[in-house]
Length: 178
Image (cartoon, rainbow, N blue to C red):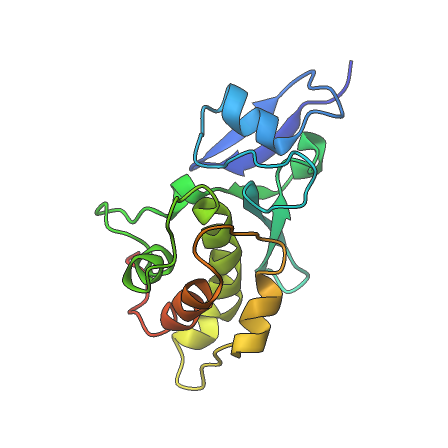
């Protein structure tokens, strides 16, 4: 019998026992955790509809955020890490996170199927720059940096300009509520 997989998700430590080593994070989310915001588009890691963010402690005690395709990320790789999905972005008062609000304000979605994946890739970028954002010497990524951060996400409806505009605009919003 193998050791259980332990990771943090939705404000709790999750423990999964006897999961096949090939079970994906997407399968866990949709079938076990009933988190349906993360979509299955291609099941091959090509479209980004299933993008989630994994957090891992760095040597300095901070957290590194990495967006990954849940459809090809195996569940055992979450052991000792933190999993973030689009459902986790809702603010305590129920309002939208600045990333989500920017997508609304910039009309970055049409059919909406790819939106959760784009939002999670943008949130990862937002978190990477978030600490500087709160400081006087903030850095905001360039449009090229933003486009590079979104290269794993495909959209067939909206086009990319409004989505990149939203990623630029998200840094103008007040920081999320604690």
